[in-house]
Every structure is written in C-alpha cells, then in structure tokens.
Amino acid sequence: MRRIGTAFGVGAASVAGLMIAASPAAAASGEYDIATYQSWVNGTYWCVNNAQNSAYGCLEVRGDYLQVGDVKADGRRTGMQWSTSGGRKGLCVNTAGKDFSFTPPTQQPSGKHLCNKDFGEGATITFRVGSCDASAHDCTNLANWSQWSDWISRKNAS
Image 1 (cartoon, one colour):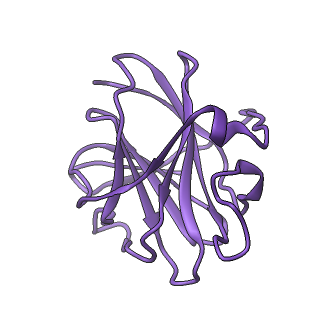
Image 2 (cartoon, one colour; image 1 turned 135 degrees about the vertical axis):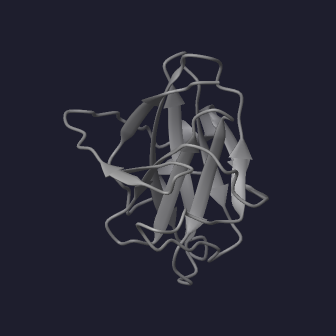
C-alpha cells in the first residue's frame, strides 16, 4: 500500500486485521461504473496494487476520485471494489486495457481512467484492486474477479 502526494514521496504502512466479505452479487447490488477516460488528478493518493502487479488503484482523498490503472497488456480488466462507512459499495472498472505507468519513488502514478464519486466529507472508504478475464467471464459478477490486493481504508477529506 502506498500514499503518494504531490511531493511524489512514498510512505509505506501496514494494514492488519481488515476483512470484508463480498457476495457474488455484490457488484449487481452496488454501484457499477466503467471508468472514464481522463488523466489522473494531481493530489494526495492512497494506493494499492495486487501481488501480480497487474492492477493498481488509488483513492484521491480530496476529490473523491477512484483511479484504476491497468499495468499489464494481458487482456484482463482491472477494477476497484469499494465500500463506505455509510453503506455504499461498488466496483469501478477499467475496460480500456493497459494505461498505467509508475516508477517509484520519483514519479507520481499516471493512468488514464477514473471514476468520479461523491463519498461525502468524513466518510471512510475501504478499497482493493483486482482483475477479471472478460473473454471468459461476466465481469459484472464479482465472483468472477480474482487476483485481489489486500483491503485498505482511508478517511475522505473532501
């Protein structure tokens, strides 16, 4: 997990004991968004990537942006599953393919697809990133997603 700010500094933190169960119909019962083409917003980020280094997701805490990066040209979709302390939940999906670059610690992450959400001031947002093989599965069904990162939680500042 990484926090990346406008000064391009990277700080590591550990997350322990955070467990959230997702039902197979979670994507259908929550919000489902296709990430729009837009360069990532500069700001303060909380980021996570999966163990396969194929998906990268950042929460920009002042503008409610879920920024989803596809790191590998492997034909899989990348997505950010999220929930809020107020009970909202959803999935933000990048369907466009590889669009992400990051060279720590000197470069800010750079992607081209995001979901602009309105989480509300002070809400805690919990999120993780994963991938889905759209050529073999229905990616609107959360049960078809895999290669998940760990969950992380951050309080929204907007």
